[in-house]
Image 1 (cartoon, one colour):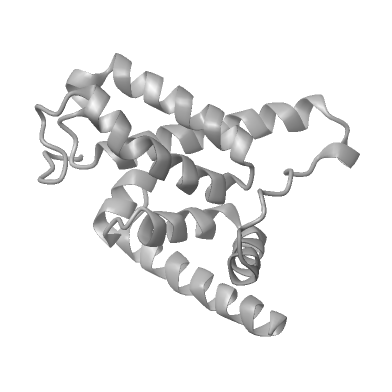
Image 2 (cartoon, helix red, strand yellow):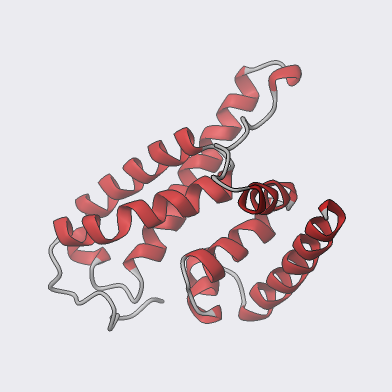
Amino acid sequence: MLTRSRATPSHLPFEQFYRDHVDRIHRALALAVGDPAVAREATDEAMARAYARWDRVRRLDNPGGWVFRVGLNWATSWWRKVRRERPPAEDRHPAAAAAPDPAGLAARSALELLPLSRRTVIVCRVLLDLSTAETAAVLDLTEGTVRSRLSRGLAELRAALAEEE
């Protein structure tokens, strides 16, 4: 169970929370799901759900983590629906928007090759700067699983980036 946060006071108005977190959550979801347009919809849906439950969400240890998880769940459900409705030949995630520099593009490409389970852990730990415990709570995993997925995912990223050099 998530508890009160020092970073997000429980009296913080939703509008301030939204301004402070929406872009970061969108970037994290775009990396996690590999499609900025789907990530934008997922972010919007998750923020709308947070707004509807703000009295409860604002008291969580990590409201931003909660919004990320809700957005990730929404995007995962969306992809499942798309897969059921499209023939297998169209069953691909659209490529993410290109990073502004070659190193960023290589890192993004390598990240997209990881399984979603490892990618989401890396996004939570690195981009969202969540602790191991916070990542475990947000993704409903044990801390050991978070550490294992992070270690394996980073090793795969290093190997993929070394191959590109």
